[in-house]
Image (cartoon, rainbow, N blue to C red; front, side, top):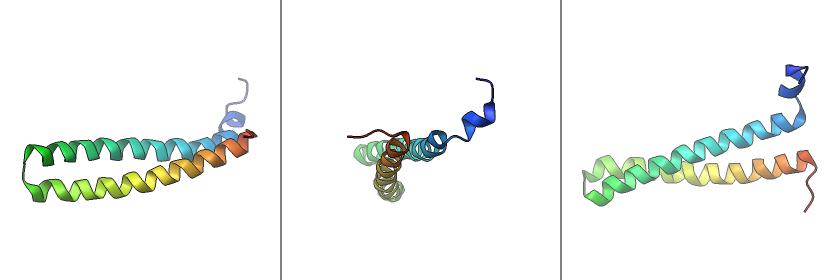
Length: 82
């Protein structure tokens, strides 16, 4: 590696950055979903468990969709053909 900025600005990196960022949010949302479901299962206060559960479900679905489309875009950018 001789030119750091060439690595950071190539088309594959730019396409991969969005995919990785969406996957990170997806991972966080699934983790939050698991914690909220655990508290709901234990019978803790429902008002404190249902709001984060609903939020995490919405974010999980949205980030899963974004991750799929951004991953497809990255694969097309890299020249991967089915």
